[in-house]
Length: 192
Length: 276
Image 1 (cartoon, rainbow over the protein chains, first blue to last red):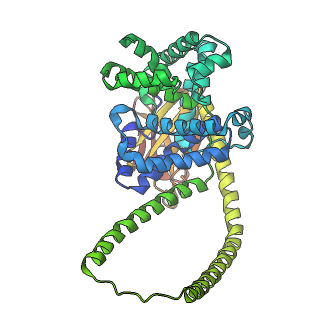
Image 2 (cartoon, one colour):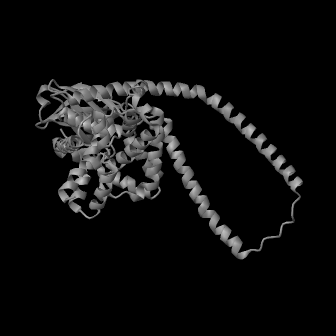
Image 3 (cartoon, chains in turn cyan, green):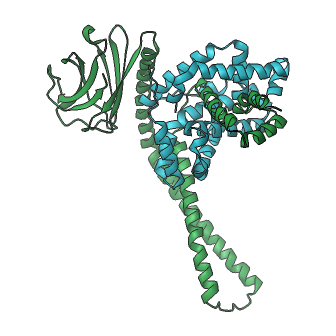
């Protein structure tokens, strides 16, 4: 079953070029296409809808200012957007300190899940594909990836948190991500 | 460090989990290593997919407008600064300014005070007008939001049911593309082995009075009628149907415009069509 995003990669590149040329409508279309996945990611990292909205606003203003810097040879538009959003969220998380990390789950109680019809239905299926692939990883590899990605912890911080040797964490992280790449295989091309 | 040592660090960089010293060393190596650059792009793409692990969530509806308003302000500010510069240079270059007489400091303060009072008064009037306007629009806005929430909830329920169908062990998906009569339209049909089918179509032109869109199941050139539906104002339409047993394998799906009650044999143009 092919899982193709409605907003194809090619057209996202065109949208980013249009944004770089000052096309406000193109920015709105990018926002419409990616707000839900990006906002979900930001809430997961920050545990706060309010903080997540601040960052999401900041991210799209950065997209407006920096779209001309986007280089398609260095990654897909989706990767560029997610990386931008995640790195801003991790920066904010570090500013906020540990107290935010302890509030796990609080934000979820007040959230509403999405509905943007067709696109989101496809994304639900994509999410399921990623979850299934993650479920196939050994638990310790999966935990290492999740701690790095959603909590923004470095390898040393993860080693300290899990009370495991640094070398072990490095191996788990590399093996986990490479296995995930292998599991998702060709479907990787179908994600935005 | 050897090339292989650097390769060991790429996954951690893709997850931004490198410690500072390793990150600096790898960045220097990456600048001159095409092999590592290429693997870096792949691993970064994979790491990005972890975002799908997070529950997708809808931000508040006002955020979109806030972002676009910020962007518009930036554009205006740039436009103003672009316009001011030539005027300044022209004034400085071509005109001689009148010498202003020195001002008495007390009279300056007096006129500043009057000016400030005028601004405060105008601000007060504007604030009152805004409050009045806000109050007047709140009621209608509330009603609109309620209706929107109801519609969103129904859409959400449908979407969840469709996603469940799609991700069930025997779930299938067919994509329907708009034909030349509706190039902006597209649809997805999810169905399972029992023939339970859920359609979601977008971008359809509104159906003329007395007409509706009808789903067709085509197998070996035999066209079997499905149910009819009418899209909403945004061109979105949904439909739940039961696929005839004979059409469940390798059927082609099509959507045509027909009389509202539906027909047994297609008469109208094909608006959406799946590949075989």
